[in-house]
Length: 116
Image (cartoon, rainbow, N blue to C red; front, side):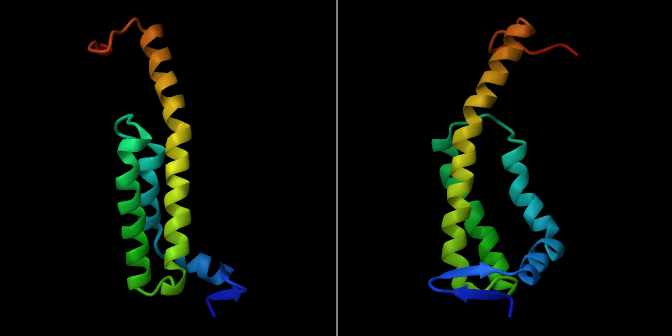
């Protein structure tokens, strides 16, 4: 059995986690890269719909190919979406602060770029 049901919660066991992360590294990495290396700094409010679509798409594919059981789809969708929104809310002020510091350090205005 790939997962254990205790009460009303589904718990993933080691075999299922290994199957998810070892056989679908590309899918996991492609879902995580936008969180680590955002192409633009944008408000969490703007990125919220795309975070939901991304989480839904990845989980839908994992369940469709029977890598994950469908009965934990909703739980993973909610927790994955909330995790992404939380990270976006926490990292946005830090990224804005980093951009502000770099502009100040390199004497750049918002329309000016660093000459390399």
